[in-house]
Length: 131
Image: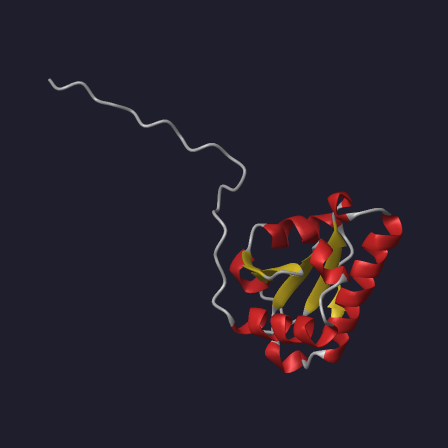
């Protein structure tokens, strides 16, 4: 299992499927869906936004998420996928065993698909005048 480190990889995964949990959001992307014939390892990235606290709190959230992934069996992760765990503030106080169960459940849940045109406004509906 490798780490995601480049911004372009994080942005690509953000347009994929997502599963919500109290302590994190799991985003996933099948690299084969991008037209790549990719047989590389599973890659995972971690991020925590500034709204979740100051730097030491964000680092603690990130460390807890990394440890949860280390303790989880990699069999539950799908091959040819990239994953991003977006930490939430509840990760600071949530029981560690519960977080492991949440992550295991997130890997098995059907993911909510993101829209292809995410962040774009829908095209206005055109009305035709009757002839």
